[in-house]
View 1 (spheres, rainbow, N blue to C red):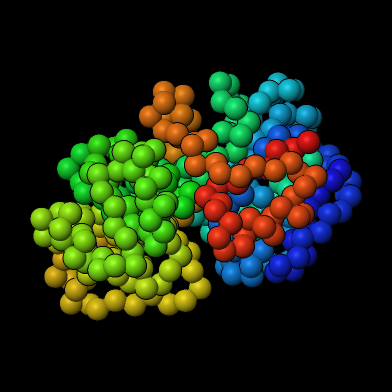
View 2: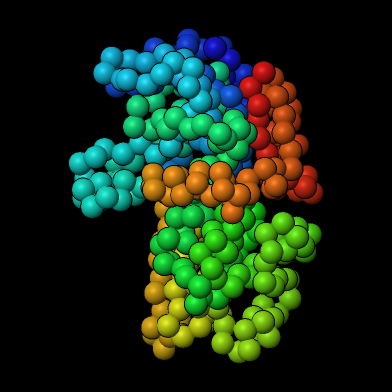
Amino acid sequence: MRTIICVEPGTLESKILDKPVPKSGEVLVKIKSIGICGTDIHAYGGNQPYFSYPRILGHELSGVIEEVGSGVDLPLGAAVYIIPYLHCGECIACRNNKPNCCTNIEVVGVHRDGGMCEYIAVPKTAVVVTEGVSFNDMALIECLAIGAHAVKRAQINENDTVLVLGAGPIGIGALQFSKIAGATVFASDVMQDKLDFCVKEYGLDGTVNALGDVTQQLSDLTDGQFPTVIIDCTGNAKAMESTFTNLAHGGRIVFVSVIKSPITFQDPEFHKRETTLLGSRNATQDDFEHVVACLKNGTAKSGSFVTHTAKFSDLLTTFDDWVKPGSGVIKAVVEMD
C-alpha cells in the first residue's frame, strides 16, 4: 500500500509497505479522508512533544471497513471515523473513565504510525460506524472533539463569558461548542482576517486583536468584568501566561495547547481570583458523539473552515506549501485517490 512517512523534521517520503492484516479484535480501515492537524504540522517542524521519527502521520481519519479480525462483528463496507486515542483500560485514568489521558496512551500518528496511508489496522474500540456524515466531515470530528472536550472541562454554560485564544481549527471548535453551550463568546488572534471569518461563520459576540492591548479590549468588551473562562489554543507561552491576569475573579482557565517551554504566573494573581486551572487533553467518546450529533442537527459546522484540499498522490508537494507562512491554510483535508 502507498504510505507517506515523516522520516525526520522537514522531510516526507513516499514508500510502499505491506497492507496490514487485522489481528484478533482489530479492524482494517480503508482510508478515505485525512484531516491535517497542528500535531502533524508541529511534528513535521520538529516541535511536537511525545514524538519520535520516522513516523506515518495522520490521526484525523475516516474510511470504510475493509476487513475484520476474529471477535469483531462490524459490517464490511460501513463508513467509519477513528478515535485515535488507544488506551490500556487498566490504569488509574482508564478506571476513572478518563481514557483520553491514559497513562499508557498511544495516539495514532504520534506514538504509533497513523493514517497517511491507504489502510490502517486499529482496535475495534477505536472504530465508530457513522451514517449521514461525509468522509471529509468525519475526518474533522476529532479536531472538533478537542474543542468540545475543553468546553466540557470548563463546564461552560449560558452564564459564562468565554475568551478563546487562537482562531485556528482547535480554537474554532472551542468557540463553536462554547456558543452551543449558550455562552457569550469572544475570540482573540493575531490575524484579523481569521477573526472576521469567525464572526461571519459562527456569530461571535466580539473579537480581540492580539497585536493590540488585549487587557483593555477585554475590559471594554466586558464592562471591566473580564471573561469567566479563557481557553488557550495558541501554543504560545506568552498568550498562555496572559490568561492569569485577563481572567474574571472566580474564573477558569483551560490549556488545550501543549508546548515544550515552561509556563509561569504570579501566585498573588492566581490566588486573588481563586483561579481554576485545567488541562484538556484529547477527547472522550462522549465528546465525539456530541460533535456528530451537532453536525447532524446543524448547530456545529465543519466544512466551513476547510480552506484547502488535496489528493493523496499530490501530498508530498502540497504539504510543504501548506505549512509555509502566508499559505492561508485554516484547515486542510487530504482525499484518498
